[in-house]
Length: 144
Image (tube, rainbow, N blue to C red; front, side, top):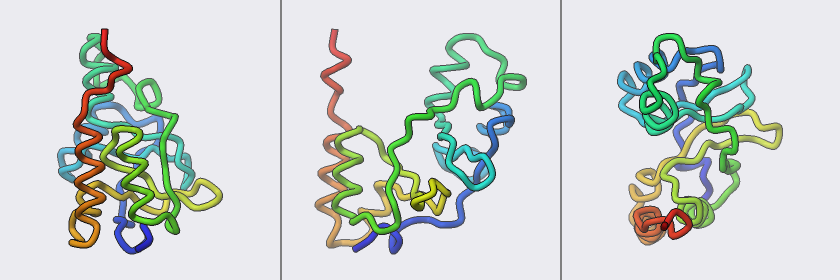
């Protein structure tokens, strides 16, 4: 099964000039932990609830005046609509992430797929379980 059959295509996005408060409010309103950041329809990065906490709040930055562009994750792992569910699960496990933006060949945002989307379909439950177990493992690169 391809990601196009599993992804959410109606995705709320923000531009890089939005404030962190606006991003946090959008996450709250949508009950999500990630908002894609776009320049027009092109994916420029993502902002996560963790990005806001670690890159701004923990450093004492004002979320009402700090812009998304100052905390955005720009090196985004993304997939295309043609990516298989198995390959997406492998990427999630490898990079220890729970969500993947879906882009076309021109880096235009098409949607987003979450680990829960993979788990919804019974036949992909193993892929989702494997990815989640890998994501939940501590990153040995961070060990001190």
